Length: 183
View (cartoon, one colour):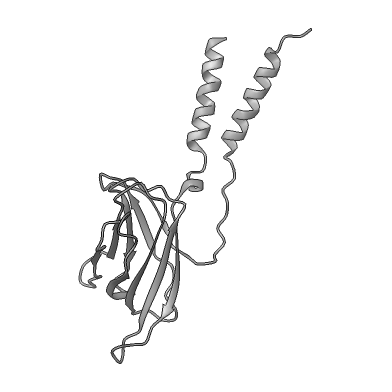
């Protein structure tokens, strides 16, 4: 009897742990704005970012990654709130000779859930700039999640409960019902 109760509890906890973690993920939205080109032959743009649904720990943060084949001349022209975020933000310009992306890093000073900031850049690609990769890191600088930025107004899917979570909830309910005293 105890073993089955333990097994059911373990299944339920495992189901909760394996449930879709994207329900708690950081969302990074951007709006791409074409700017006047200061130098002929360049194509200057800006991303106005909004980060939400977060949960950054103090000294944790966000790295935005910029492909050196598509971006140059990175500059943070609108910093996030200095009471919650370390300013100035770290900016490492993409270098096409290195096998690494350019980087804009935001580091939280407090436990925060949101930020707004602006990054300007020279667009080297064709058409309109789109989504880019990001990674979230903890207070030990260890990446804990990653994703792609979303154009402002994009619709994201709300994750459904995992099948294991639903199954273990059903098993738990049936087990409790079978044990109910009759009478």
